[in-house]
Amino acid sequence: MCAMTDDTSAAPRGLPAPPPLGACALPPGTYDGRLVLVTGGGTGLGWAVAAEFARLGAGVMIVSRKAEHLAPAREELMAVEGAGLVTAATCDIRDPARITEVYDAAFAAHGRIPDVLVNNAAANFPVPAEELSPNGWRSVVDITLNGTYFMTREFGRRHLSAGTPGSVIAVGASYAWTGGPGYAHSSAAKAGVKNLVETLAVEWGPYGIQVNGLVPGLMPHEDMTPDIRQNLDRANGVDRASGIDRADDPAGRQPALRVGAPRELGWAATFLASPYARFVSGHTLVVDGANWQRRALVNAPVTPVREQLGRGPFEGG
Image 1: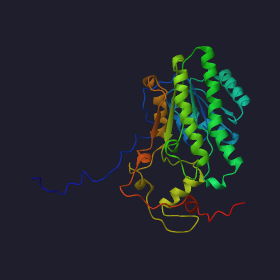
Image 2: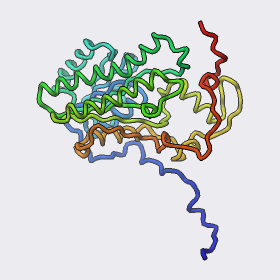
Image 3: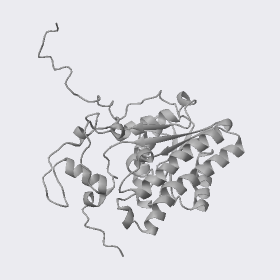
């Protein structure tokens, strides 16, 4: 019979913290002489991904619709130890003609076609489906799905013409599998992105182009959308909308018992596009500490989306 002890080694502790910022998941110089193009790279997770490629020696081009994001982001990337040449360009990825100009500019500045494309740019906002306007639907789908396709199409056409290999990473969302109440536009678009990853991986694999997806979990950063910020506020004990005290801990809502660090998404991206993952293609890697797969033994009460968003009954019209 086993003796009872006071050993607390089995108490929940969550997943270990990541290595410090500046640590490299791959050998230094892995991306020497390579060019990485990151859409939505001026802030947030896009910038974090660009920084990890730069740290490994890559030349980087960051793209954003907002010109004011680019200058400071470029300066910060140039300061990353190991970084190659860093350039920046404004681009609305809904515009194929402008995308062509951006790829031409990348070639002019760096002397090569981008070796890696990271499709990070997207659009999103929470809204009940019955209140989602046609313009709101089109805007999110145009940026998130159509823009991703236009960027990827130009990348593929240039590599196919040149006969050179390449790697595409499309940043997705876990509700591409599950659906996303309150996000009909974004979840439909992200499902399309996931399907695009799987389709192009098969079409372009024979030509040396790998295509993968990458899904972030909760990784607090300065460029979070208002709905994510409010969720974090509530979890930290502040509900700005109602003033209700909701003392809680966002980490305690994750199976990992912690939130993610943006650099962890960057490490995953640098692996997927690296020589060490050449046989990984058509895959979507989720970096969220298993949060999207969490299930309770007892189903929680259902709260309609309108109530979650603090809206009254739908009046029509």
